[in-house]
Figure 1 (cartoon, rainbow, N blue to C red):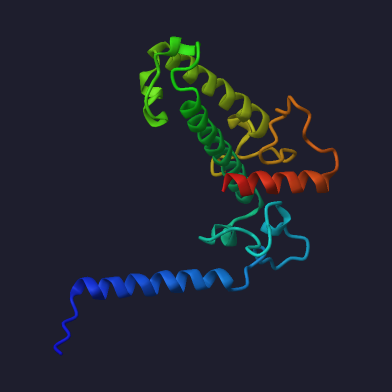
Figure 2: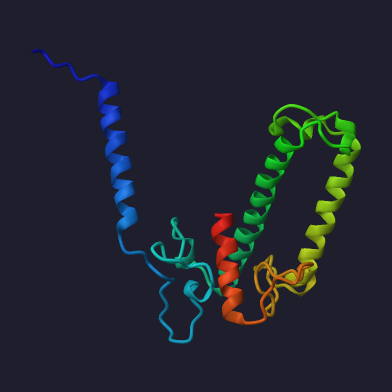
Length: 194
């Protein structure tokens, strides 16, 4: 029996060991917040979004070196990108469900959802761009300090009173008045966005 081990076999073993070691880390105790030397200092654990068994979700350790303002900007970015991702997922499902069955666009849009946006009249791109620009400018006016009032070395500073993700858009009145209930709702949104 002459057993010949090929380079592909060695790579397969290395990949398998790496995958098993990575999955074993999921059962290790999770850090629940950024460490602090002061009793009154802001920590990542002060932000909603931590759930058992993961705890505070920061797989790359960005929160360890971040101050309060930076953590709030990270959370704002996480919420914003999570919302965009959730809307995109709904857009794909709707596009697949109503393909050429709607009066919108005269039923001319067909095929898989991934290619439907490219089939839309170019005029829609103008309205889409204007809508995104308006939404982003409103979000900036609500959450960010005006550029002329921000120190040169601290661009993108959020307002002290601003809660990341709270742009005042709640047409259905779903935002709870109680802060604990609001934290639970924010955590659910973060988990869905992740």
